[in-house]
Image (cartoon, rainbow, N blue to C red; front, side, top):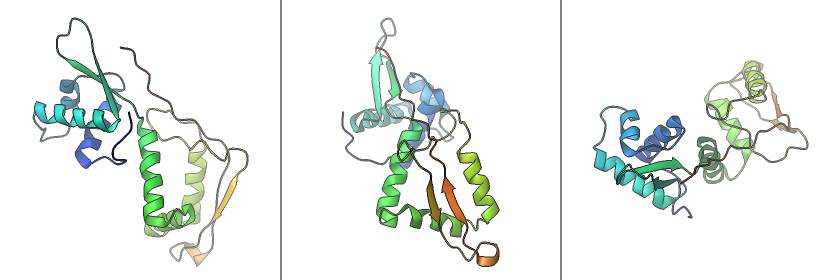
Length: 177
């Protein structure tokens, strides 16, 4: 099923976050229990799950012996959605330029060259797919050098920001009816 819209509303994202945290099929009650206070009504959660199904982010099935209860599973991982949302932000807010996007965050967060280096080192370490984002699965043959300037950096220097080519492929969600 194709997504009608690429991004999720705030409440849709909260519902998806609850489903991602459960990390297996769940009924609407399971999801409702994980939502922050004040919790919406059960029917509201069921409606959001229906919308998420229509958008292609969630699928559902029934298990014999559980009556009319639908079990919901995420069709998109948190990492896949985050990658999609960040690509949209890069395209819409920064004209598709990763350099402009990274420089914006370096300047906005007042990162030092040392902090940038620490981020790069942490980004190349092995990660657990369920708890963190994976690097995109492209340009894996060579390291990419990125340079951006920021007056917020110590000495106003131009830190070199580079990533090595190691990246993990996003884990897909498998389920059985």
